[in-house]
Length: 126
Image 1: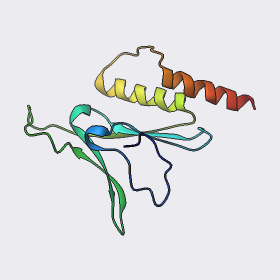
Image 2: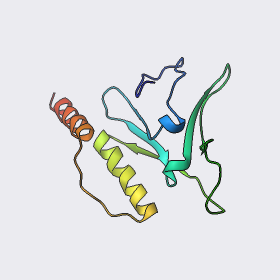
Image 3: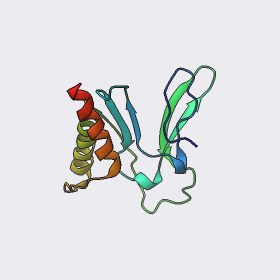
């Protein structure tokens, strides 16, 4: 399974199910970034890429492996966030998730965000 791919009209593989997660789409420059993810109930939410002769769609719903819900009335909501850079998009995404779920910001650096931030800063200087 691949973790990333170039989207074209012929793309027929976007990871979903137990291997899926947050979907991040971006242009080559990194100036336009879109994040799609569950808003809550992350561990039971599924994204599936459905391709047929006339459909190329993303479906969101409950994981097929869920056998029983612990509480009635479970809600699955999806959020889409736009940003003008990776930092901007992920900051906005974090703000939305914290506002909805009542969390507090935590500053944490990681290799991926550091790498993408540095690439973006280098490109801006050119």
